[in-house]
Length: 369
Image (cartoon, rainbow, N blue to C red; front, side, top):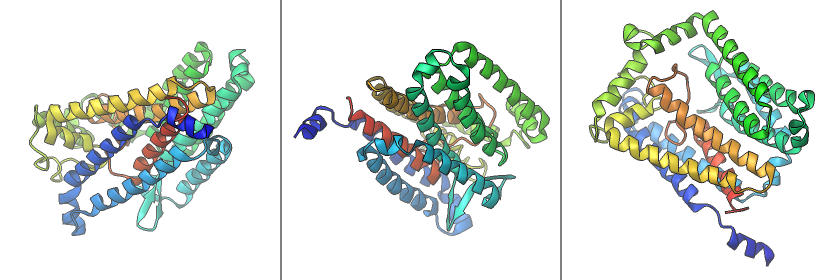
């Protein structure tokens, strides 16, 4: 009786659920629009990627419902198991993964591919939330060996496994998660500043010491100078945004997806959105993304338990970083890296991981609304 009363008093955040489903629906439409011609030419089935993405959406929705309804102890009590599993997956990715573009970031399972990075983000959030909630006294008392080193060490192991793939963008994403969680977890500012400076220096050394990364960096600084080589994808993305103007060319009427813009249905799908729906359509998606994040951070703010609060905050950080970094890449404000747009870009791992984040937030929203 008491459980029923609490459930009625603290309902699930249906606005958060609605915004996530709406974004996923828009993603399905744009995946079909951006991939149909390419899929028909190379696979004789213009609905191929749409059907796969629809299947991923159904699976993701089911996983989201499970995460929203299961006892949250299922996440917390198995924290170290989640970390261990993603470590195993990242190792298998290097050993058994298929090399695409010189990197082994995917494990093929039949006709599908699994990208462990997307689930490593979630496992890292669970671990960091658990650590900062349970070790808060040690963090607050500035005990370096116990209050600082463990989260950096665990994140470092995951980053090392990503770098040997190699996946520089995924490594940077994990470091951003660590920084954000340390910031709200109470880590001393001097440690955060020092680690940020050290990370920036290490990042630059990795870029400067690797020819293809250095070429990407110089192409990012002036893509039109190398528009036929390293800057080609970014230039085509900017052309797509520029040609969209205010209302766009119309859904399905874009030209950049006609084999001009590489990865039009993947990481650069927002360029197709900009071309076909224009500034107006992009603005609507921005507002929907902002609304989802506001609802998500609201869930985190209203949690009374530290573990719940840190977990909700971390799930929001995963989504927020995905949205911001993807848009920054396609608009040319950061060097191009493989960061999918949550709920919009084609890809099962990214879509299901995004649904997991929302499912955990929905679960926590029932605790306090």
